[in-house]
Length: 146
Ligand code: CMP
Image (tube, rainbow, N blue to C red; front, side, top):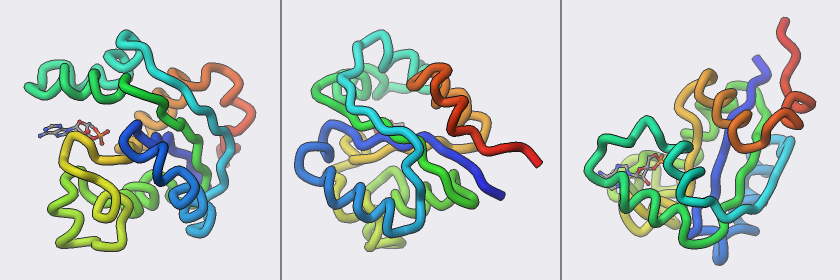
């Protein structure tokens, strides 16, 4: 089924790899339904990653995500959530280099924190984060339920 997901190009990857990543996203058959570049406030980054609030790396994660611009994208494709996860590879680039050396994280990520890209882990999260980042304008890009 046609599906959408939220993708983020993180500050570590945006400056140097933006064009490559966008080109590869489109080359893999995703449609970029919405796109915006933004510097997250601490409050936004904390809310965006609220599921990780108790993790030992939470403060570092928020610092990192606020240190420069991120690109936020709504990607549409069949099985977009899973397809984007496959394209990113595992969170830890060392693991990514072992199991999917072609993946974005294998090629561009420095370590498990500075891991270049983010993607929603399931359809419900995708819709929640899309609404959080893009607000109601994103409703126009919603796939029709059938
Ligand atoms: P992301 O997929 O955006 O989801 C949560 C983020 O937390 C993750 O990518 C990394 O940036 C970061 N992260 C996950 N696990 C760790 C870890 N063990 N140490 C530091 N950062 C982590």
